[in-house]
Length: 240
Ligand SMILES: NC(=O)c1ccc[n+]([C@@H]2O[C@H](COP(=O)([O-])OP(=O)(O)OC[C@H]3O[C@@H](n4cnc5c(N)ncnc54)[C@H](OP(=O)(O)O)[C@@H]3O)[C@@H](O)[C@H]2O)c1
Image (cartoon, rainbow, N blue to C red; front, side, top):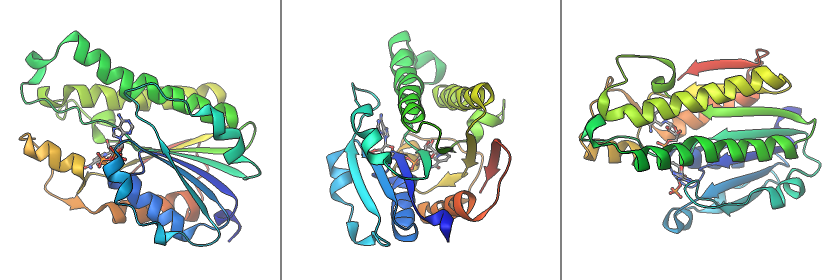
């Protein structure tokens, strides 16, 4: 299928959780495509077995921590090269769960959280959007009900995550409406069994749902939305 070929996929946060499942699924299903994924912890990178790569795909790991200085522009032009479609999979998002709730937050913590998850994310988006030129461009955003529903989910313990998720979603929507020459697919996956979910549970999270998916189920759904469905709308939000 022509759509499976000559893609450039950039997975922000592809070393574990949902991003890693997407990396493995796309790396085995796409053809003649370049997949760049970012990793933050070396221990996560080292767990990846690259035996999944098929179809003449090239898979390139890149160290990137949104909480620190990073440079992604340098290689983007080279990586995108002659690829026809550019897809930015936005996964990385730090857990914003706080047992002490609003009273435990302080200005420095709020500032760091938003720099990492929103401002620095915008830098990555801008770099990819510049480098893709006029090529077909899709942002695939792993969203959350925190950014789209409320206010019942906006519990005090989740306040950072709720506002951070909403900010990212609003930025993407505004950017799409302003330029209009790319599309945004947002998938709200519900609860997914990943390290982040486990971390939240260990901290005593309260949850609105008991149902949990596996990362590979979300990867299959992501692939279907990006490569098998024909979605014309410039901005769409899906649930699992
Ligand atoms: N899991 C759920 O139940 C759930 C529900 C709704 C929405 N989501 C959303 O789905 C996305 C993926 O979640 P997940 O559960 O798969 O998370 P995860 O298991 O914690 O994985 C997150 C990925 O992002 C990377 N990452 C985290 N913080 C980073 C930072 N500061 N800079 C650069 N990379 C960073 C991690 O890198 P390393 O592994 O190398 O550290 C990892 O590759 C997130 O946007 C999340 O909000 C998840």
